[in-house]
Image 1 (cartoon, rainbow, N blue to C red):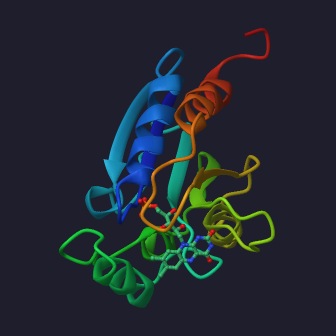
Image 2 (cartoon, helix red, strand yellow):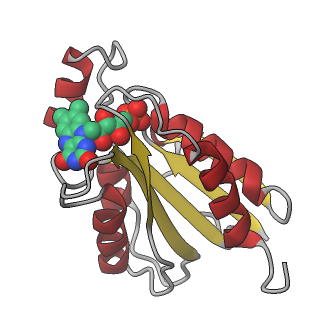
Length: 168
Ligand SMILES: Cc1cc2nc3c(=O)[nH]c(=O)nc-3n(C[C@H](O)[C@H](O)[C@H](O)COP(=O)(O)O)c2cc1C
């Protein structure tokens, strides 16, 4: 199996989760891991599984304005010109599409609605991805992080479960 993991991050937490997911997947797949700014403009036919993740901003995927706000709060110095919302929207709506699965990071607050991964899954369906797997969220303690204890292990296991066969 060949997989592509595309991630967006402002404070580095989603990058760590993406790296752990890719690690878990590598047991049974060839995995390419790229930040959204370097992601290809189209998905190669060779990709069987597309995994897309980003931070939850304002109950959904980030927008330019929310990334600017993150930058003002001490996130990456240069604000990110495109996030996963823009990348997904710019993908061509061709016929052949890999399996799609999304993840996000969000703050550890039980009643906080919305998750970037759910919005990304809806966007992917609109784009023509007919095979989508259940999205997953990973928790951070505050806007800047750090990740909640145990989330990196959970991400590694989740990644493994995406590519491992049913007997695994
Ligand atoms: C502008 C802004 C809006 C946010 N809105 C939400 C939100 O609606 N729900 C939530 O759970 N977390 C929210 N957060 C927290 C982010 O999810 C958190 O910063 C992110 O998971 C950290 O990931 P990163 O280090 O990869 O940027 C917000 C953060 C920012 C900067």
